Length: 418
Ligand SMILES: Cc1cc2nc3c(=O)[nH]c(=O)nc-3n(C[C@H](O)[C@H](O)[C@H](O)COP(=O)(O)OP(=O)(O)OC[C@H]3O[C@@H](n4cnc5c(N)ncnc54)[C@H](O)[C@@H]3O)c2cc1C
View 1 (cartoon, rainbow, N blue to C red):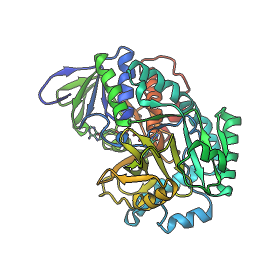
View 2: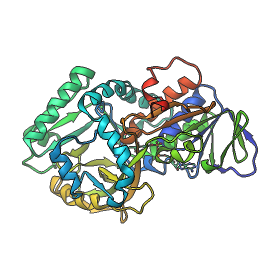
View 3: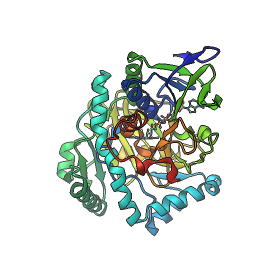
């Protein structure tokens, strides 16, 4: 990887942003014969793609919607819950995107949206397996799925009902578990839980950063180039895009939560907002860990066994992307996690990691040609599912950019919808 200073280089496409989405776009374009430069202000995979929960969520056809029930809204308004928190001073700037998020979460609109979103999710597992096989990275993907653990019979029943709809409408498999079956599946969880819903198909990445780096290394073996550059230096000169010494007729903006820094220069101001999230790792006591990732539904955090230990990841924090970390949800989740998994041992990271999920009000990513900017393309806004959808987004956008037949109708994800 080199800094772009006074070099003069040509490429067919410059991909801006080296998170999982940008890397996957770059590799798919390079696989289709384009000469691609991947440009990031730092090394690939060091922002949000570094620290997620590692799930390739082949089951996630129902993305996280805005709560509509009054009881939930009151609970969140108190700002004391583990699964969601907010910075009160930032709320005025969130009103517009959150109102739109609420609007799109209305049950009728939401269900219609899931049908438009599902083709991406349903392709995600096969697209990862294809890319991981090419990249020699299958050892980073662990089979076995993941499990929701429920304290209350009421939430378990509701989750089972939803799982049944997902099975009927989208063919997604789940395994209902009563208390005994959950205990047999994850023997180190505390007793007294109501049961669980197990999703057997998703794969779990044991080191999401390593996976992004493996895909980036594969991109380089295909002839792709990785350069360090600040995307804010992008300029248009006639039909060409210039980034310091680099020239290309096409660009892709894939900078996750930072994408508006470039798209607004190009006249496109998406209603993107971030849900920040945190993680910390813990050592299991002896071998008393987890077989697969577990979501504590009552408290809204995930425990995912990874290379570096058991990774506790938190839910959504509504705050300015760049304001200093306030890991209160991690502080609330840790005691709950110790109750759920009494063998959770020493905390391994002195400081929590923080990432920023790039979210859109209609819960779908923005993928397609930039309005009014020939030669510019967008791929961002993957919210809770960027790891899951990286290779699928990369494939879809590369198909569009090389005039190949897209594997699914890309219109639901087009930037103009905002
Ligand atoms: C706690 C947590 C748990 C999660 N768990 C999961 C999960 O289990 N499964 C799942 O599918 N998703 C999960 N996600 C979501 C997922 O991590 C994100 O959707 C995904 O990482 C977004 O990838 P990205 O490539 O769009 O953005 P990023 O990974 O954030 O990459 C953006 C890139 O743009 C670069 N950039 C920014 N500004 C500039 C600039 N000026 N010039 C050049 N480059 C720039 C950055 O350096 C960075 O490399 C989770 C997220 C969090 C926070």
